Length: 259
Image (cartoon, one colour):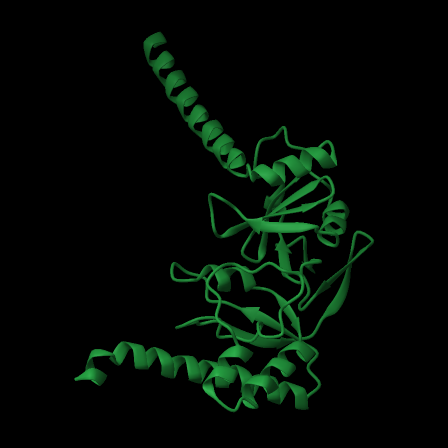
């Protein structure tokens, strides 16, 4: 009866063990084949945890994961095994990964995995970008930023937000991505992160550059980042869109009256 009542729990435990062993096996095999880096791949949907969403797209050196994998495999008891692979609930954006974190699963019923990748360089408008695959036709560039995440930038990053916002060039954006000083989750949308780099604010959505803003000064950018006022962009977009609809409706009414 006890086992029957806790079927879901034991299924979760077995899934966790299987997932961990699959990732460890991948790391062990990669070590034999000279893999130098791995990419965190999370399943993004309504069930994705804050932790997995924050780690999605992160590039992790193989040496870090190999060391953690060995600590898990060498554990003599459950306590040591748990200490070698701690669970996390909240988002993690630190530049340096703790020695007991990086190898999935990150929590109970975690669906995230790591896959081997090879980092190449590509020149975009004279700037060197680092990526695990060349940019596609609909992309401006792919680049691994200074926080260790591979991000994708498309042309629509220059269409989001009010027209009054200053937009940096592609080369300025790449330089900014190389020098991010801080990043945090958006207050209004957990799928978005707000990053600051000098005068430039970068807003990411998962592994994509969602939009970018160039402020008039570093102090202005710091204030923007501190207040996390990203919602102003989306509110202004909604306002402009709704205003355009109202104007269109009003014009239609005027035409009917005039007709």
